[in-house]
Amino acid sequence: MPATKPVSDAFTADRIMPAAKVEEGIEIVKAQFASATVLPQKIWETQFALAAEILTFMGRRMQAQAEFCTKLGRCTEFGEAIGVQQDFARGVGGAYADEAGKLSTLARKNMDAWTGASAQYVSNLTALQKKAA
Image 1 (cartoon, rainbow, N blue to C red):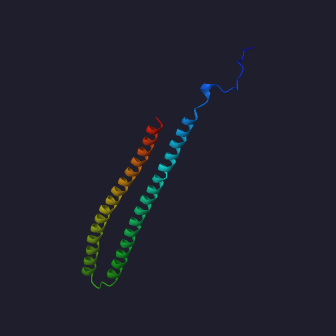
Image 2: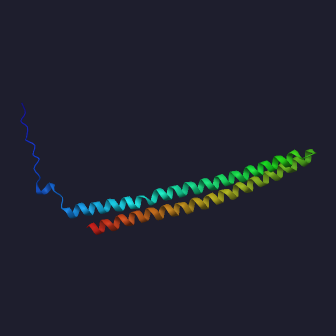
Image 3: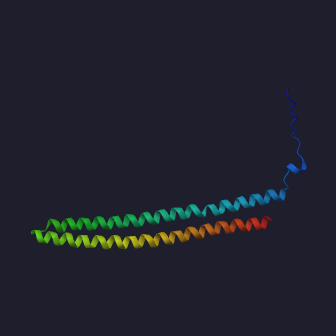
């Protein structure tokens, strides 16, 4: 039968963390939580801004489609209908090109905000770690 070592519940000096170290750890965790709350806010702002822009664009496109159908329904000649379709097609290309530019600008602004929030998070954490050291 193998010999077993007795287990000790005694607290030794090397197992007890000094109170100052515990407090420093708590401060670091508090800073992490405080900084972490900034990121979800930026995520929501990004998602809602993009959703609002996309939905607004979809609304404009649906309105343009409705107007196209109205104009097309009023045509009395084949050539007139072709002209209405060509005008609509030209407008579609420009509308999508403009929207791509808007979404690109919005995405860039949101990435800047994310970068700023992340930098703030790292800065707060680094400052607390330096303070703790």
